[in-house]
Image (cartoon, rainbow, N blue to C red; front, side):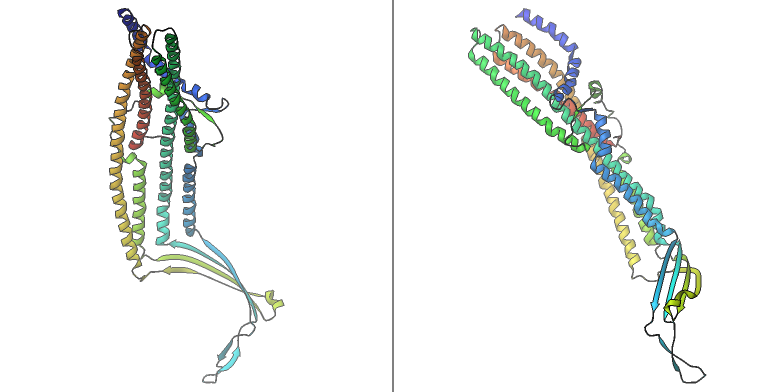
Length: 458
């Protein structure tokens, strides 16, 4: 007994030295498991490449980019009124009966009935106008860049959500692939135990129940492996959907083990800055737009001023065939002014409504600050707890490997019952799966914390 205990401790020291290398190799083998699920001819994509692809092809993001173009085009339409407006129109008229009028030829004389006008007329004209000042156009000019800014910020918000969603889906897929590797190792290990138990049973060393218990444990491990393998397909589908990747095409996930382990660290001493959150920036832009709206209704009583020029080239003749034989042009130029005197109190009511809407935006800002703080504290707590959990489970993996190694040696020498091996095996697989869960939960909670702090880049 003492001999095997010393031998066990000898190997334990080696296990401690290669712990991180073993865990790293375990993670690195995920791509091999995936290659057996996806065709070997598919593309290998890292997390950053998945994010870059999503930023180029994700449908919701493409819609946001189109909304920016729509905002620009809408501004051009609204600002077009500042440019000269030129129209050409013409009226071709034929009188079936000329108009009748009464004229007095002598002072105090009797009015004489006469027909006036020309049977045929054609009056083409050109009208040009230029807005010089208008409260409406002034509002459009000042608010135009704000609407573009808001559309860009909404697009940035979509990009942040895409980066976070793709990253978490990527990690979720890797977790399943890691579990497959662990379960395969567990199944192979249990298969060896079944064979050893069978030979010992045949040799009369152990009871038949040891072989049956080993077989049951192996079957349970195979069931878990099958479930994990089947889960890979829908998880790939989910990642493709978030990326905007074509469903019929395949790809493999590729990753750097060392960088992934190093990526779990995050400076938790950083202070929360609300201004870095894109939602907060959008609220501020909406407040600026609402300020412009209030100013518009406040000064809507100001007059509108524009310049105009009209040119008419008139043709008159009683004979339609000779209509264009001579022309009688005329032109005018001047200023047009419009002053709203009374509009049924619509301006005052619009101003009152705009101020109420401004109050709503202010309350939305208060609620948003509270929401951001809640998200930040929740994400920070989850990150810290998951980090602590990872470190503790990392120790459990070392201990579980040690216990399993010692118990296996003891069982082979007939010192302990096979039930001890089953317990040690169960503890080992649970500790390894638990460690993987903790690792990827930590990576996922880090994404949530970076998003809550407004630190996600794209």
